[in-house]
Image (cartoon, rainbow, N blue to C red):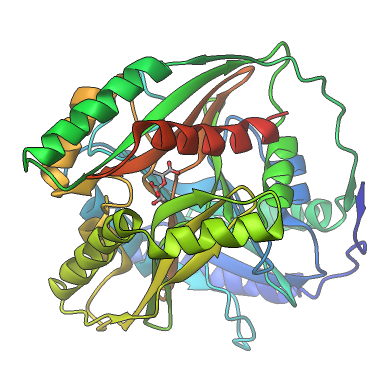
Length: 469
Ligand SMILES: C=C(O[C@@H]1C=C(C(=O)O)C=C[C@H]1O)C(=O)O
């Protein structure tokens, strides 16, 4: 059980807000267009996951993001505007949607006290299109009704509302007041429900077949068809009871404090969740940060064994080649956008169960480059597809007998100032009531040992399985 200080009064002048909304309604009348009013409110430090658990409903679009190590957590609940699309131009269509909505956003923040802007939350699938029965669209973007952003020293709640000439403002204010009061008085303590593990599992791509696929991929690599391919496995899991989204996310953040914990719902009862160590992009005041992450080893059981594994990883030719392919690809594709990256020294990214070779990449981005142009250029990187990209993607389609869907694809947010963060949705699971499909993969290059790659995938899947309750 976790107990946090209970939120107290918040400072929002509803009379002043009413006058402001009247002026916004006038504007909407003149423009003949609905306007979005964004109302930021500083509230006491809360756990956004508890708010998420209490407020988020299965029939709404919802989004959760947390990096415990960085003391950052975001909950986005329900949509005031949304778009779900398929197809090749999905990144630019989402960009246009954000641009159009942003033109209609009016922020009620007269003193300019808050630097937290309203954010658009997005998920993309690995490929441009998804199979007809896959429960998420190839691209989803939404402006939430409620956004809660907590960092190390403050929590900002944002209410986004749509106003048109017909909106009944006298009725809206008491509703808003009651909703805000409900949110800030949510009991900041929670009891985890006890849940007996009775999980049944079945590999979709059975392990023997995956081993054969890895051998076939190695033959293609030797024949010079490609340099690297990332092959994944899907694991079907059933439980007697429905999985608890809250418990699973809470487990993930406790077990993987250095990873990005995420959850996105499709408003039809399915959720895509995971704990990813890989940041595709993060942009703050035009400073771009990217993680090149590829090349792995397990963690050792003792400090000496761990150090030995780390040293082997840092010095292995095969792992270094697998890693370099990712750095070269990112550099090249940023150059194509006129971005000159700085490649920092390679290092280790040590997680609870696994360690990776990691090279941080930084750059200052020009004013005219939108975060989604960078995402569109980079996705999928050779960390999750391979090299060359097109051939690797064709072979992934050929070899993998399951829909990747949101696995290994960009998930994140963009605010109205083009600050942004997208992670790569690896080590993830599609949850559908009492059923789940777990996904994890590994990069194959010349010299890969199929048994080791299979063991790496199992290690990643087991970490997820442990969190599902
Ligand atoms: C593809 C995944 O992870 C990727 C593959 C890695 C590897 O093979 O060394 C390391 C990190 C990720 O780039 C996954 O976890 O599903």
